[in-house]
Length: 122
Image (cartoon, rainbow, N blue to C red; front, top):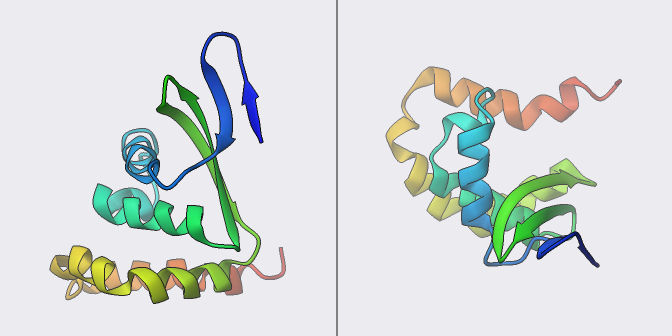
């Protein structure tokens, strides 16, 4: 579904060419949180997986093909994580390799992965 606004702005599901622009917006505009501490190219993989996965979605607002904003979510976080690691494990590992031996980083990774279980009763 594509919704057109005044002028050339449109609202649509993100496409396979959008993850880098989405990652840059995330990095520039979301200052707190674990994902924001990661490199843009990791976020590009992450949003690429969100766009591709059957268990997640990403919608964007564009003006002349440029992403201005986005919203993303998942219907099943565990299945999304499985998809992400299956498809992007090697490239993500390489991108994160400088931080792999930093205990505080590894702790944050596990906190992020286990977050849905810790908040299951919400």
